[in-house]
Image 1 (tube, rainbow, N blue to C red):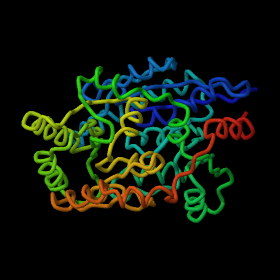
Image 2 (cartoon, rainbow, N blue to C red):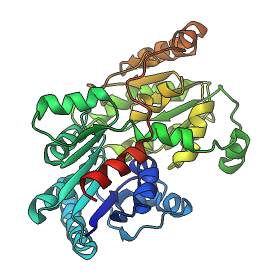
Image 3 (cartoon, rainbow, N blue to C red):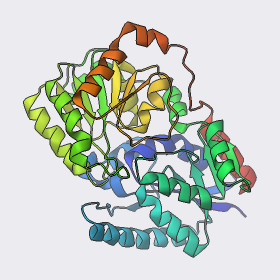
Length: 373
C-alpha cells in the first residue's frame, strides 16, 4: 500500500525551493503525493505568488486562501486557528500519513500542532541551520525535533542535527534545493525583464535588495531600517527591491520603500519577482543587499558579492563573498565600496561554499521511496 504524502507551501520563497521536489514526488510510483498552496501565496500585497505556481504547471491539489496577519497578537492567533482547521480538513481528505515542509516560517506552527495531535510524521527540508535574529529559528528546530526524516543543505547542517539529537535515524545531506534550481532553470534575459518591469537596468550595474524584519533581536523595526533608508535615499546606484515577508514590521518596511521610491528614481520596487526572474536578476546584479537567506546561499554560489545587514541571519555560516554590515548608513556605504572593488571580486572567485549543490530533488525522492514508499 502506497504512503500518502502532503507537501505544503505557504510562501513565495519556499515554493521556489520546493518546485523541483514536488515534480519529482508527483512522478513517484511508490508514493501518493498531493500538493497544497496556502497563506502568503494569496496575498496581493506580496505579489500574489499563486500565479507563479499556476504558471509553473504545478496546479495545487488543495488551496488554503486564508492569509496570516501579523498586525497584532490576537489577529495572528485568529488566523492560525482558522488555518489549522482548513489544514486539518486537507490532511483528512488526502489521508496523509506524512507532511513535507521546508524551512522555518512561523506559519508552520500549524503543521507542528496538527502532526502531534493527528499522529502524522513530518518530513523536513533545510533543517540544522540557525537564524538567531528571527523567531523562525525556534520553529525550524521544533520541526527538526519532531521530524521523522530531515533533509539538510550540507554536511555541516546534518552534523548540527545529530549533535543536538544523536538518536535521529533519518538525517540526510541532500544539498540545497535552491542551488539545484539555479542549474535547472533557464535564465530570463535582462532585456526581457527590463521590458516586463519597465526598467532600464544594465548588467553588473544595479543592486538586488531584500530586507525582512528581525523578529528576535529586540531592536525596533525603525532602528533596524534607519541606516538602510538613508542609504537608499542617497544612492545613485539603481536598486531593485523585493517586498519583505509578512512578519511584524514587514508593512513598515514596504511603506518606507514606497516613500523612498517617490523621491529617488534609482529605486524600483516589485512585490514578487518569482523564482526564475529573481535568479536571473541576481546573476546580472553587481551585488545583493539586505538580510535574505539568498545572500548566504544563492549569491555566493553565483559569486555575487552580498551585503548582509544586521542580525537576522546570525548563526548561519557565511562564505567569503558575504560582507557583514552594521545598521548605520556609513556601515552600509563602506560595505558597498568593498563589494564593488575589483580586489574583492577577485578574492571570491575560489571561495569555499557553505551550502552544497546536489541533485536534491532526486535524492529526496529516492530516500523517501526507500523509507516510506
